[in-house]
Length: 297
Length: 271
Image 1 (cartoon, each protein chain N blue to C red):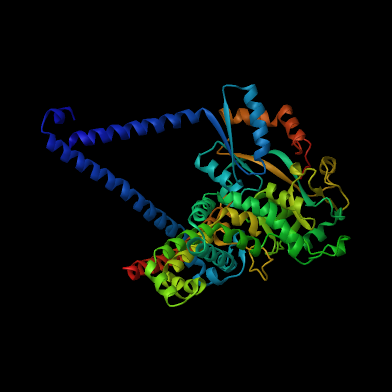
Image 2: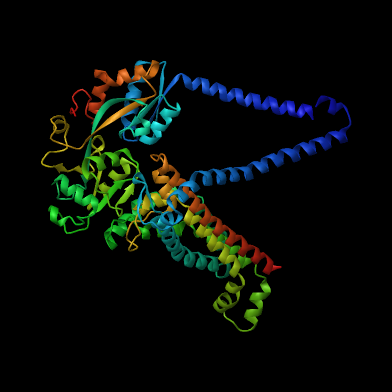
C-alpha cells in the first residue's frame, strides 16, 4: 500500500475501486449462497424420507406418530392453511379499511400520527403477541365461547393483527400512487367520495392490494413462536374454530429438540413442504407486484 | 494483488487463531447437556459444585434427552442428561442413574377431582373418556394436555401409563413441563402430566390408585409413576466429568436433589 501512495494516484484509485467491487461481490454472493446452502441442506435431509415412506402417505396421512415411524403431515398442512385463512379473514378487511381511511378520509396530521404507529406494530416481537394471546385472548375464548381456548380462532386473531402492518403499508402506498386525476375525474362526474373509493381507487390499486395480501399471507404462514403459544398444537385436523391446531412451522419448532434419526428427517421434510408453499406464495406476490408497476407506467 | 491476498490470509489466520483460543478455553469447562426435565436440577448441582470448586466451570444446557445423547456421542458435551432409556443404537454410551423422578398427573385447584385410577388416566389420555362427569367432576369436556413426541417425560408417561395405547391426537401439545403446568394452572378443566418436582401451588397432583404423589409413597413403591434420571458419557467418565458425577452421587449432592423435589438414588425403588 505504501508504494502505491508514493506512486501514481490514478492507478491506486482504480485498484481501490476494483477491491471494493470484489469485496461487495463476495458479500452479495454470500447472501445468495446462504440461501442455496439452506435449500440444498433441507432437501438433502428431508427429501429421502418422503420418498421412502411414499409422498402420498406423507402428504395425505392424517396420523403423526413420528416415534412409531408414522409420518402424516395432512393435519399440519390443513392447520397452516386454516390459521392463515383465518388471519386473512380478520386482517384483510381491517387492513384495507385502515388503508382507505388513512389515504382518503383523514387529514394530514392524523395520517402523520397513525401511519408510524401502525408501522410500529410490525416491530413488536412475535413472542410478545403470543404472550398477550395467552394471557388475554385464550382465557377470554375459553370462558365465553368454550373449548380449551388454545384454538384456530385465537391463532387467527393474533396472526390477523400481526399482518396488519404489512397489509396497511403496502395498500396505502399503492392507493397513494394513483394519479390525482383519477379522483378529480370521478368527483367531476358527480361521484361521492365513497363511490370514488369503491369504483375507482380500489380497482385501480388492485394489484398492489393483492400483493399486500399475499405478503401478509407469507408472514402468517411462516409465523412460529406466537402460534406455538396460542394454537394448542394438537396434531389433528380441527373440527371447529375452537379446536386446537398445529401448523407446519410449530411442528418443526415443537419437536426439534428431542427428535433424532428419521423423526428429525421428517421434520426437515416438514420444512421442505413449508418451503414449497412459501415459494409459491412469493412467486405469486412477485408476479402481481410487477404487474402493478407495469400498469402504473 | 499479492499484497491483497496476504492481507486476506492474515485476517483469516487471525480469525482462525481467535476461534482456536475459544475452543481451548472451553476445554477447561465441563459441559452437561440434555433433558429439560433434569436441567433445573443439574443447574442446582452445578451451582453448588462450582462454589466448592471455584477453578472449574460447569456449563449446563437444555435441548432435550435426544439432543443431549447426540451431543454426548459427538463429543460436544462430556455428560449427557436423559430422562428416557437409551435406544439400541445408543447403547455404546455409559449410563449412570443420578436420581429418580415421580410423574404427577395434575389438575386445576378448583377441579373437585382429586383421585383417579391408572386405567382412568389411560382412558383420559387415549381420548376414550372425554368428560369430567364420570370422575366426580363438573359436566365439562376434559382438556387433555400432553408433551410433544420424542420428549422424555412423554416417553416415560407412555411407558408407565399408556403401554401400547396411543395418546389421542386431539390432545393439546406443549414442549416443556413449565408450559404444561401453565396451561393446567389456568384452565379449570385441563389435565396434564409433569415432573413431580415441578408441581407447585398453582396445580394439584392427583392421587393415583389410592396413593398420593409423595416422596414417601414413591420410596415404599405405592406410587407407580417413577422414572430414572440418567447421566450418560462416552466410556467411563474421567477427570472433571467424574468429579462432577461423584459430587452428584455424594450425600451432599443427593441431599440437594431431595430439597428440589426429586427422589435420591440410594433410597429409590429397586426394580
